[in-house]
Image 1: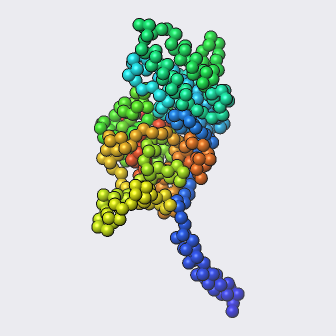
Image 2: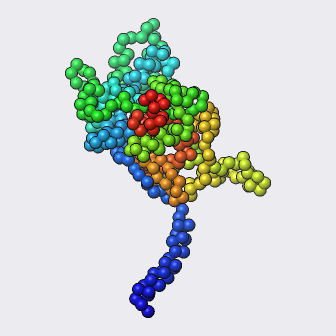
Image 3: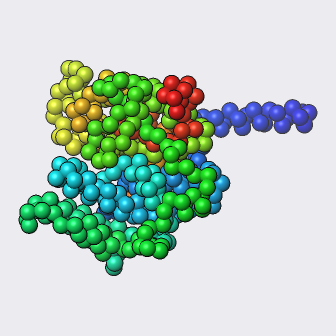
Length: 399
């Protein structure tokens, strides 16, 4: 037999014998198998631990990626500096409103941007913000002490509020978080110093978007979530446009600070995935209904939210999204940082999302993959650079 013919015949036989084995291997894959399509530059995952400061960790990570995009070296910024600055502002508003304002550890991505505008920024080395004797952030006692102190102040037991209460409040922050680095005359380093170090970074270049039907589209409104304590305005766009903005930003090299609901049972950080399964017990019939009624609540949840394999997902409309916001099933729970796009073994796309629950908190190094259905339903808002907005939307909003 001719050598070439022999080799070709042998290759054909080998191909035929290996194909079934390959198909079998693919069919036996269990669990979600994610492949990154692309990841934008991001700094290492951190751990907010026992503090309600996800907003600062997410937005700080976002700013660090912005600095990387601008060509600056990797920078480890201080999350607790922004927490400190936000607490000063929250306390002032709380007292001025006689306690009729939100005061607590929560916040929004713009709180970091607002702090940078007013007071610049510090690195983690300059201001670690750790309570003495601790190696991780534990804020339960701090949060309680600050709130109780302010509640005592607004009661005005002497008939009027003293002029020194802000100094005492600042002393409490210093005791728990440490002293802010000072320059002459006791003033904190102003934003001008930050601009000298990062001249191309402009905190005025960032805007927030949301999508709800109870306000007109393409107008800005005060988003009604408790952690929007500063009453910042968000641009309201149709849901499809919100998703378009997110994809356009990532494809053009811009990351996203993402505010979302994580109380949904389709959110599983341990499994590195967030989805909206399409199973609905209300649509079951006959024997299925009887079988379902005999399951325990734990068994029902296990079937509804089975993360062993990719699932079909619900189609999320603006009406479904609005209802979830209205009835509190989708609430302002947690902020994270979206840095790329992945897909599962079936080709479905997901947002690669950086969390702040430590790098060893799951099998994906502290990251998770958020489906588009989940994002459509549970995205409360996003913070992005103006240049990340599609031109037609940017033009309509006159940005």
